[in-house]
Structures are given as C-alpha cells and as structure tokens.
Length: 187
Image (tube, rainbow, N blue to C red; front, top):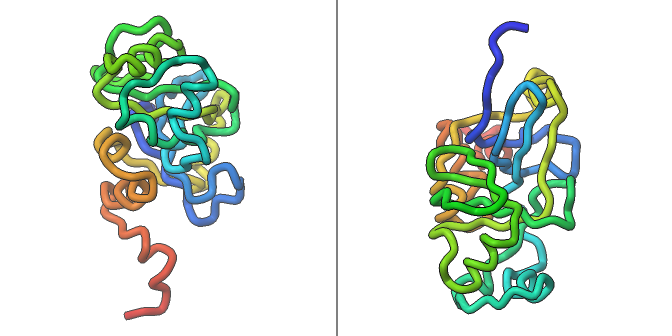
C-alpha cells in the first residue's frame, strides 16, 4: 500500500474536473481521516437558511444577534437532516470529535444551546450534513486527481465569507484560483 496519508485538518479543493454536483467548486474541511475512511464538511456552500431559522426549528432561543443572520451551510450529502458544528476552542461538549488541539466537530445540541445563550465557542460554523468516504475511497479519488489538498488554516473557515474561502485555500497552495479557470490564453 505504501505510505498512508492522513488528511485530518486539511482542506480538499475540488478540481475543475469534479463531476459530482455535490462537490463541484467546493472546499471541504477534513475532520477525520483514518484507515476506516474519512469525514469532511463542505465549508463554502451556504444554503437559504439562517441560524435564527435553524434555532427556531430546534426550539433553541438565539439571543446572539450577530449569529442570527449567519448562514447555515450544506456540509455534504450524508445526514442532511443533522446539524454539525465546527468550532474553536474545543470546549467540553457531549458529543465532540477532536480534530486538533483547538478545533472540534460537535453533533450534540448542547453546543447550540450554549451559543443561543451567548456562551458558545468563540468561532462556530454550522452545517447540515457531511461528506463521507469509505475505507480507501478518498485515497482513490486523490489518485485520480479529483482533489488538491493543503493543510487547513482555521482562519479561512471562521474569518472569511463563504465565497472567499476557496480562493484563500488556493492561495495557501500558492495558486491563483481565477488563473486556473479564467486566464487561459492570456499572456
């Protein structure tokens, strides 16, 4: 098999040739990658739902005005009826996957309840659904050049608007995304 690559805490940048409509033009943050497979969250596809609408649906008051208008994101095609919260700092929640020393992915409601009270993590990203790969599947897609990978910078996720995240991840790689598609034939 050769050397196994662990892409936990990396960005996956969909190549322009990506055929799957769920992942065309996406930037995905890999939360877990091991021999059993991989789990990621698409981080640049906001949906037509604000956090205030989501919190209403799950009957949690949301006092934090800054959060109310934040978009919910399409995190991937798996379990689209479930919320997934990427956050920093890690904190201490009921059901959290620790991604790094300061980043977590939480699926329990307590993190949202805390956010509603203004006591949630300093940085939060909320998606419905996630992207999942079975054992060896992500490695196979990488071998087919479906994705570019780069070590993740959490600031790209938390500090930039959705449309700025993919170009920023490309810049981490030293590539100008607009040149990848638009500038063909220009000297």
